[in-house]
Image (cartoon, rainbow, N blue to C red; front, side, top):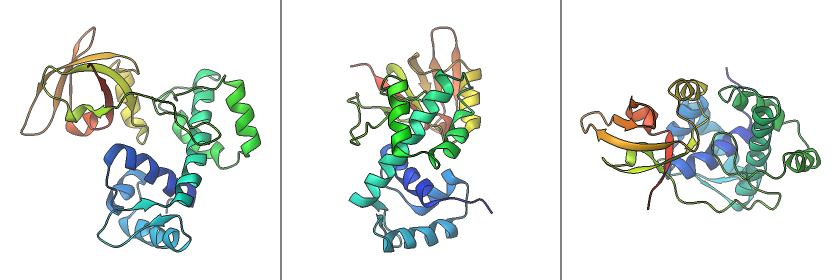
Length: 219
């Protein structure tokens, strides 16, 4: 059985809230690749410990205690990803899993030094904002899932979900990178797939992939 820590659950809830809005146990289960029953059991424990508000058949919310805990772990994770990518030149589809290991063994003092060494980065290699030591996030324009855009919408890729290394590897092979300009050429209603145009070619993306790529739309 996959061993998922309390920190992993809280971090997942924090990220999913920003990307999916209302959070249900099956969404957490899908992203952590564990059973819904295991998620339900942990949510009950987290609720008892004051980290989340959870009632069956209703959405999950972080308490202020849970939010603070999650932000601290997210900060560690995203700084380690940045270090692995920028300093050690690791491929971006591999840094998420390595950062997962490092974040759990890093003191706050070490992470402060890491942030200073990296010259206080605002975003990680996948486009996620990095909280500072006070928990504040850098100001940024709103982003929208590519699957939510309409035909002829334009913008730049601001974030690609790092939950699945396979998605990151696929994106890299297609030349989809943070900061890349795209135009939605077509969107098929029957399956939600999206045809986009980049500077060099046209790419057809399934709804699932498009749902995990986030765009800053042109104004």
